[in-house]
Image: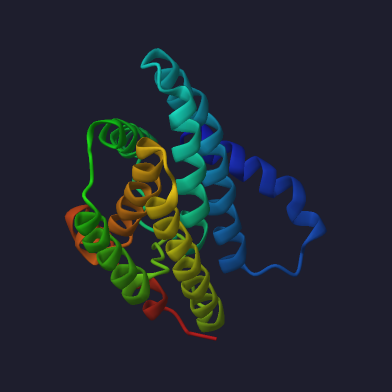
Length: 202
């Protein structure tokens, strides 16, 4: 058992006596959420240290915020191990920063990427995981609506922000996160898709 899993079990065992009415399924979902939070606490210092060494700390903080905001409503794939998760996170974050600095995106290309993003958000957001299935249809519809709204804001920002690098960051962060909710990405990493369908919906 890894450190984040041990810590999540310890935290939940401490609070379990005060929430005795919680079901086992809810307990497992809560454990997974706390475990992800603990993993992120471990990842963030490593990511920002690497960003500092690459001299892209300021941009990396912005990308971290952009990813965090949109992922809050779109959800998306999770890796099976902490190391794989850390590697993929670094590739996504630093990839967005370096591509944003290197690329000059023509307005037609931006428009094309924007259409792809809106289509994916409309079709696939939110994308749940085996460990965190989204059983509530109401929550799925709410998250989809919020994801689309935030997606349009990112796209608008990518067209009106004067700074080329930051403009690219808005669009590329959105695009990468859209890939993270695509069924193709789930298939590549051999993860189950639309996990709520395997449970009783309510």
